[in-house]
Length: 264
Ligand code: COA
Image 1 (cartoon, rainbow, N blue to C red):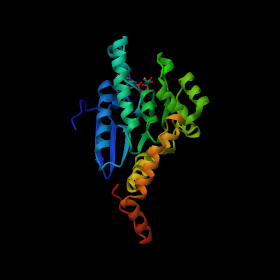
Image 2: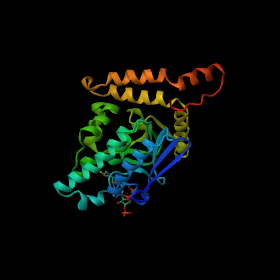
Image 3: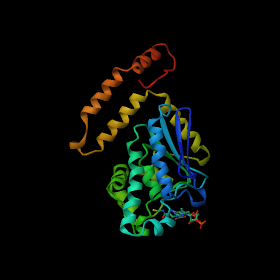
């Protein structure tokens, strides 16, 4: 894959697609080039059948992502036309993340702020280290989030905590984030990668069609009732029952062995 920056890294290993934000000197703040590369990497992982689950992480030990790169705001986000272009790139990347039909895990070490939190909100599962700090500094910068990011935050923590997070712009500790459901799990920093890898490996060894159906169906429950695609859910359930993997799952259980799923 030809990326336009070395500040994003994509690697595939044992069914796991690793996407690394690689700008540690800037606490992995996301430049426009990085947002573009995120879209390319996610698209590549979506198409690559050897990738069963995706894990996002930040390089170094200080940050997942400390937000969008504020140093580019003057140059790339100062008038209406530029803002429109910049927003289109960001929403393109977020849309790719949201459209990924494979499980997406955010492995959060250190700062996870602003645009970094919106990236993490697109993950299905967030695992944080004890030293993680999460927040939405927008109100300290004079900017505001659109509907999608706010909806994802409200879906996770409810309106009261979403308001406290957005109004105060303060950073929450990992413990607080865990208490309100912003992250699934908190582990010591030294165990973070191992924990994320273990969970990703478990998911990667499960039946891909079942995992895909679960992700889709849970996503539908969060939509307005009128937009839910019940037909697609029924088709996915049927596809699972008709699959070779269902035969493999039952056979492996009866034979007391580990199933070998192919995703068909
Ligand atoms: N955009 C651009 N540069 C950033 C950045 C961001 N979002 N976050 C950190 N950096 C840069 C800093 O400017 C600094 O650069 P320098 O070494 O050239 O001075 C470098 O990363 C290290 O940051 P520093 O503030 O010295 O580290 P810290 O550990 O004391 O604090 C943060 C880390 C993340 C708390 C602090 O950098 C911060 O508040 N960043 C902005 C967070 C934010 O508002 N994000 C939302 C953007 S939409």
